[in-house]
Image 1 (cartoon, helix red, strand yellow):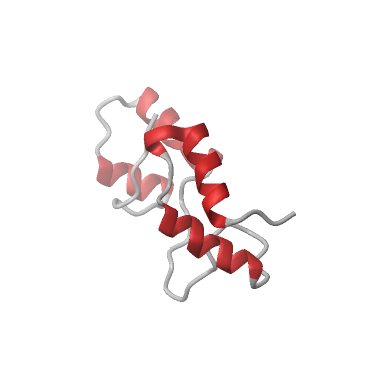
Image 2 (spheres, one colour):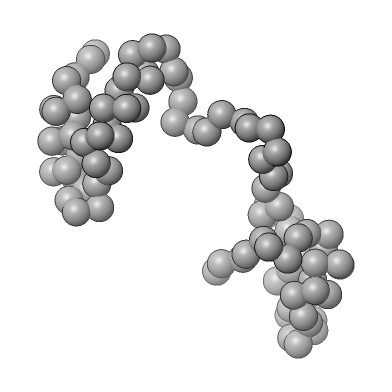
Length: 90
């Protein structure tokens, strides 16, 4: 089933309101899918970092913080083997 981009955008705006993506994005994505794209996921790129935020890593970090509340970011980096540029959110 293929809907016109204006109709897709209208339906998405009705659903998500002000948090909806722009019509230009809907047009770009529609074009990609018409050309055969199958997924919204980003294609892998060279030099792209591997995600360090895994359920196991999160558990390790929370456990270390629970055991030693004043553990520094650098200590966490060394003990869990992650980069300090990785951010954890609760």
